[in-house]
Image (tube, rainbow, N blue to C red; front, side):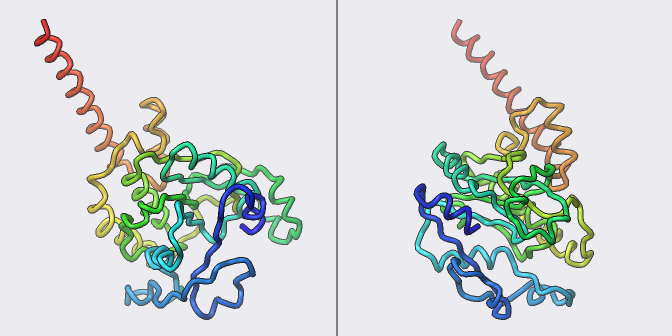
Length: 272
């Protein structure tokens, strides 16, 4: 992140920020703005959990209120590395008017766990990954996010962020294949903690989706530009998108097209 910031130093102003639990302050490197500590974790909102002290994504993003306003904010999972030109490419997308950008990572081999030369990480093109772990959002979107008590480090944090951004953004962009970020490890679906998984799942389907679902529009979601059969395959295979939502949105989209066609026929008859 520091290298990417330096690479883009003449392009735009970038602030790297961190919020943390008090016991984690010692590992924060120089060059980051240290925001106030997190005061609660998922253990405080769900008494049935008693293992990992994982932060809540809403609490993390709320810390941005301690900073002067910025035009855009970026949330990136902590195990994601940035290519040096990352901010330069994001800046180009911003100039084109996108107000939300979701960027997929590249997966590279675990052999780099012992590698000290970061250029080797940059050079490895790796493999694609279907998950979502880097989110760029215009500042106006930050206040609209509905995230419940979903915690980071567990599935459904990416589901919540993706569905929020693609619901509320006017011009969202999905970037699935560019070499902009990377992650050490080739696993796509790592082993998950059952209790934490169900906590996040329940938070999403009970507290988040009912609020944002009225804003779902298939034309703004990933794969919208693909043909019907390709869009169906991509959507149904992606673990962060849901078949029920897809079918409902396709029916709604088809109904709107039929309504538009019938109205066109109606107006043409009236014009004769």
